[in-house]
Length: 307
Ligand SMILES: [Zn+2]
Ligand SMILES: [Zn+2]
Ligand SMILES: [Zn+2]
Ligand SMILES: [Zn+2]
Ligand SMILES: [Zn+2]
Image (cartoon, rainbow, N blue to C red; front, top):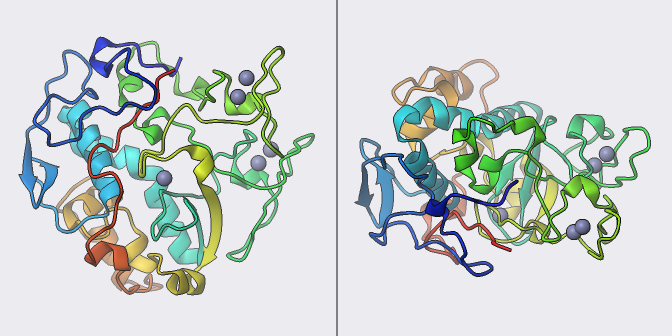
């Protein structure tokens, strides 16, 4: 189901082959056939949708926007808002509660995904169905009857989360049935939520979950990542963004406003968050946003693994 089928997806590529990087001048494979590409321009070496201004960016989210814009060209703002809604709401909640839940590779100075109580765990249950947690939690076990999950571990629950935008264009696509998969072709829910995460599917010899997709933010496998519970203080210590810097597109006002309100010129929600009563703290700028970013993959954010 999650396997790309359209010719435009670069069918038949070898394992882990990536489409050409954005900006290479070639047509990007993320655009389904028949979809007119969005006008893009190059700014400071970064491809941005025409009409949008970008400053220094968190590269991960920038490339997400590019592939997304190219696939969705028409309703860019409302669709971008929808794409980032889970992360925007997670960021707003984190600032209010002081509990930041992020999914990232342990050495990273940014989160690949901002999480909230509705985020899904590998065990198939959302965080809300797990035990109580705080900003100092390390393992948050599942409370759902019969579930053996001992520690919440985020798993993508929407194909967009792994850069697979074309599903939305298929008339028969049902988002509620989509599941992230292992290379053994079985879903995360068919794997043991504890230990090595063996496949439980009868006759399958898979000994541990090995994602057949790569992180849309960093191009690494799911299993290279961990879910972290942080407080503002621990994030400051670790050099991770917090406060307003934790919002999606914190350094790109137009896109940040779209994520918050659906409109690039509407600053109302941002102002309410940063200046109103109970305003979120103005965090120090994370190192990664102002310094040259040491990011291993300068090209595509979109990298399906074919099998
Ligand atoms: Zn569970
Ligand atoms: Zn769980
Ligand atoms: Zn497997
Ligand atoms: Zn299997
Ligand atoms: Zn990642």
